[in-house]
Every structure is written in structure tokens, then in C-alpha cells.
Image (cartoon, rainbow, N blue to C red; front, side):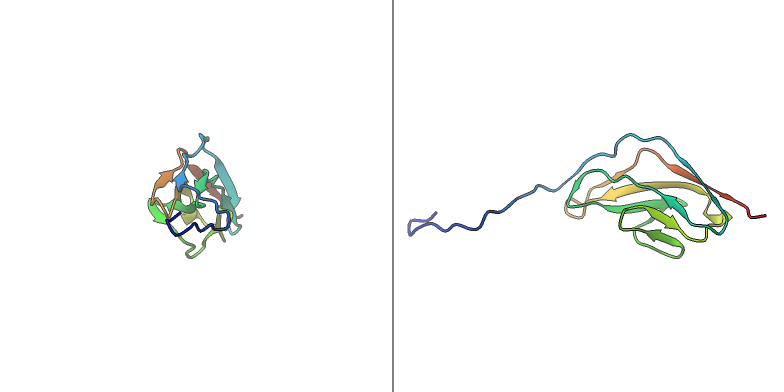
Length: 117
């Protein structure tokens, strides 16, 4: 409102940017045969806007698909043509691009790759 009059816009929705904590989870052991595709699931917490997923792979953060590591739109990590080199611990994190907060899952998943005979 101004002394000269008032202007009204169409209804708008305003949402405050936020990033919730991860829910408590237990460690999962994922087993896959060598050469197959392994899937590591990440249950992202509630976030506005939607959080971007990151994975800790061999103590290095992976923010985008690279090599045989594919970050899917669902937030899951697919490891294509899994080999012994891919064995180890995997942990996911959520990143809110507006608040620039990063929250890390409290649990890690362990990948075991069975050798082909």
C-alpha cells in the first residue's frame, strides 16, 4: 500500500530454506558379484529446496557422477561393473544450495564384492 493506492499480486507461496537432520539408520552391508552393478541407497532428509546428494567414496567426496560411480536422480549411488577396488565404506550427505548447509548421514554402508569364479 502507498498513499497513491494499493497493488495486489497473485497469491504467492514463500518457503524458508532449511535442511533437516538425517533419520537414525543402521549400517547396511551390500554384497554384489564382481562385474555387476551395486546400489547404495541414500535416504535424504527433508530439505527446501531439495537437497543435493554427495557421497564419501574412499575418503573423498563425490558430488557428481564420475567413472563407474553414477549418482542417480533418486539420490542412490550406482557402482557399475563393481570390482574389488570398489569395496569399502560409503556414506552420503545432503547439501542445501541456498543455506549452503551440509549434513552427513550418521551411518555408513559397507560394500563387499564377491569374486567371480
